[in-house]
Image 1 (tube, rainbow, N blue to C red):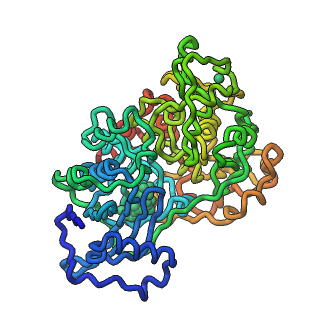
Image 2 (cartoon, helix red, strand yellow):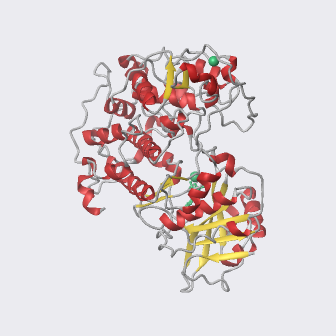
Image 3 (cartoon, rainbow, N blue to C red):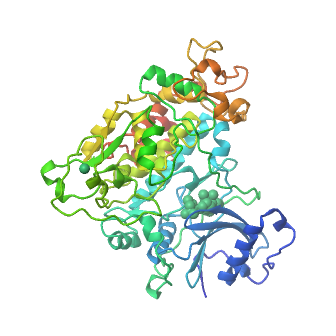
Length: 580
Ligand code: ADP
Ligand code: MG
Ligand code: ZN
């Protein structure tokens, strides 16, 4: 057993009460109780320091627990304990820790307090930041809160990007926000990668370790191996530790990951006017704007074709290359190469050199292409937040991919929809992006980074303000019966008024509210109007700067995309710039 204290704040290990099974535990489920017992068994030292109260997060690669420790001064402090799956690759674990220790504890990046290891069990202990899932608060966020949230996210991104860390999984679940204390913390460096000049040694290691970048997820899922001594996860974290992020200890409310229900209507048609009508039909419905029915990996492409036929009949991504060379380049050509993440995926048979085909730049994928090996490019993350260069498997990916994800978050917050894009497959995700940003524009940007996309139908670029206001229900068509003149401009400050939780029609299932795609119109829905009597959270006066920043974050070409550092000096944040 090794216990490594990486922080000098004392914890009174003698007096910490033994974990109790009785009272506070009564509310947690049996499964959680069992998991907690298993954790105490796997890493007994944990029980000497912490009383584990609940499980607060569970992902593919970790379980996160809320723990409490008694401090020397007699106070009790809460901590988040992240138990990594024992099959995690040692280098990955070490790299995650090194990101937290070197870049964490400042600038809205979570720090690390302790690390425990016994055999292949590693537990990272962090200050606990109480927070709620974004899906639970999105409808009550004021514009000012959204502005501050994005500003603080960009601060965290600027900071980690200065260290040469690409987070690769930027999404609200990984950016904790405490509304009461206005604290923010970027967490989860489990998929992080280094830039070419990264300051994080272990990201350099994992960079070369991964060769040209095989998917990180595969790395993390590697079969169990005990940690060899030289890769002890804390051995390399000898640098002085930054102070931990201060965390709220006042309440024991525990947030849980919320898995949004799949929506059943694919929105959008190609014509702008029709599209806004469709969007207004989706107003105030707390569902993704985009989604899909079928997440079966084998039949994805054809299922997708059907499910999204209103928007894109077929999308195919190919490497832009001289057709004469095509036969030498096996991967990334057929769309099948893009749906590579299924766990049940079998290694594909390589196509012999010299075999060529005639499907290039057509909207079909031939059998030859289907059997080609995938192009190797990092592709970790969550499909709905993935940048176009990630979705198209561009091998040169940089910090700009995190900026894109921040753009998707801003789009989500401005439109009041979370998640905004819900896609289980990269092609679906790409077609959803094209529906917002335009197919021609996407194709052109992809060309710039060496990819060719074929899309059977042209999708016009949406005006971001029109899109967000329509989805928010702040832009009813003037021919609506209940058309209400939008509220006068609000100065965007909270001004002491509490945000008004949006309740009324939101919770009805979408099926009750909208007719099937293509047939529904907004006359059946009168859910979008604002209550003119009440404060609108500043949503009636969103400045143009917000949409300008959104446009720059969601720049399709990573080379032209704004950086986090530049985004912080954007006019939207003029009054905040002095604070940085
Ligand atoms: P995973 O790699 O499994 O996604 P994360 O590091 O993202 O693990 O943690 C999962 C969840 O646990 C987060 O979304 C968050 O809700 C919770 N969590 C993680 N770290 C903390 C922390 N320091 N304070 C409070 N909650 C946390
Ligand atoms: Mg996470
Ligand atoms: Zn082909």
